[in-house]
Image (cartoon, rainbow, N blue to C red; front, side, top):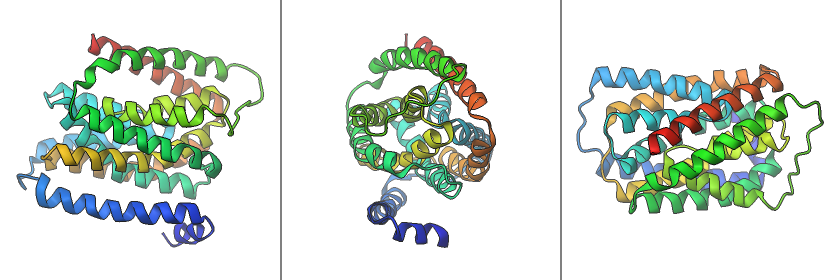
Amino acid sequence: MEKVLIRLKNEPFWAMFFGFSLMMFGLLITHTFTESIKSWEIDTEMFLWFLLVGFVAQSIDGALGMAYGVSSNSILLGIGIPPAVASAWVHFAQVFTSLASGISHWKMGNVDWNLAKKLLIPGVLGSITGAFLLSNIDGEMVKPVIAVYLFVMGFVILGKAFKKKKADFNANSRSLPLLATAGGFADAVGGGGWGPIVNGTLLSKGKIPRYAIGTGNFVEFFVSLASASTFLFFVKELSLAPVLGLILGGVVAAPFAAYICKLIKPKYLMVGVGCLIIFLSLRTFYLSI
């Protein structure tokens, strides 16, 4: 933690945002534990299952840059949890896991600070908007559109993996704010989507995999915090067993996943990401229709 604080002193912009986020983080926890949790009883069996889910989901997310929210949210929806409640639970847990993942990628040198600054504000605004809308309308309507986009993006990434061409990523692209806004919005509405949309697009545009994933996962902490805070103004209940399981499993897995991301060759990483996006998009489209 000391190394993180030293680096923050050299990054005034991130020092300000980190401090603000920690303040919001404290308010979020206070609000949650004083108003949202209705029962302190923990179902041990459910806790252990979600501990495993959190570990596996964060291992994939930290190494490939996606799938924590999608996989966790799919399970919650599968057992009958309403979309807004499921997304609220996932994002509350993801505040902790994305913080652990973001710091891990930071310490591994996987974060592109210039890119992170361009993604931050649009991503946060998109997530707040998505969380607000999902709390008041049926979020299932937009899932087929997202699924089609991700399906195409998966093949684009696979094509990049087998192309012998230098990276042509442009950090000054005017489409970055729009990309981050769409990613934050989709993430809040669908319970997951920041990784596939933002990290996936960065990879398809030629960004080096470790920096695309590391930067995306770092910014995801702020995006998750914004959506979780918004959700908890509308969703007045949390279930301790799945939420704590998702948190602890994800936090334990985060450092290992960041290390794996640094070790794996870019080609293999992109193939894995591309196949994962195609599979998840097909599944999302099938479930949404």
